[in-house]
Image 1: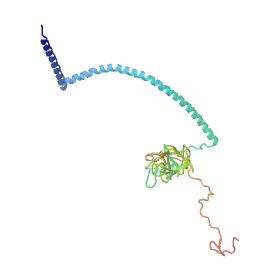
Image 2 (image 1 turned 90 degrees about the vertical axis):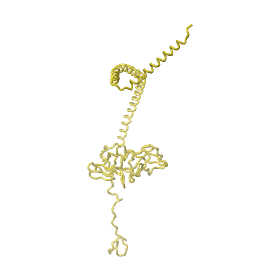
Image 3 (image 1 turned 90 degrees about the horizontal axis):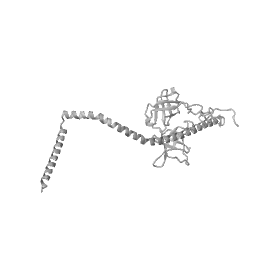
Image 4 (image 1 turned 45 degrees about the vertical axis):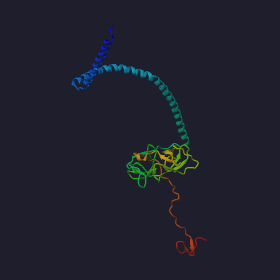
Length: 311
């Protein structure tokens, strides 16, 4: 009878030798990896150069197939997007046609009411050559003056809204009083409720609302425009929006950023100077006193009279 011990010993020795060979190979590979030999670097570079085209050739079809699958996947969503855009285009065409007809109707009504403007606004644009603000007044100086037809009182605007009005003019420059100045009083109206009021500057970022009816209920975010009352400024120029303070009071925040003013435009064909009648006596000089008798035999000038002019 053959015993099993020699076979077990043989298997143990074989496994031990195999493990030793694996450990030796690992140590050899680690040692070779640590070696900075020129031959090893050249072999690595050769293998990289050789495998790069092969990798590119193999990856290109894979990428193409992935792109095809992506296109097929997005075809459905593109079709839905196309249908939605076509629907929006049809709606915009309908709205455009309605707007055109309403514009023609508005022009016809204006013509019937004789309220069409006789001339278009003539605007002179100058560059701000000083920074806004000052010790006594919030003004800005622009490089356009009388040589461009600018006069005192004409409104100054920017692309965002009302800047102020001309306070002083020289031949080449003009000084604009900003609406944030405490001396600025602008007639406005609330565009949503159409209530008139006046805004006054506070030398800050907000304008104070004055002379607003107690029945008016301002809405936060409501647009405020010039009303044109008094004839100083034309109507319809954006001034700002209604904001509400923590105390519950309403103010107007200007749409213009006065710290970043670069160009200011002046409406030069706006006649802002009031035309007083020649017969207006409100600012007439003092009249000469009429002759009257205060003492017997003397008039008001102290001259003696022979006969009284009045009984």
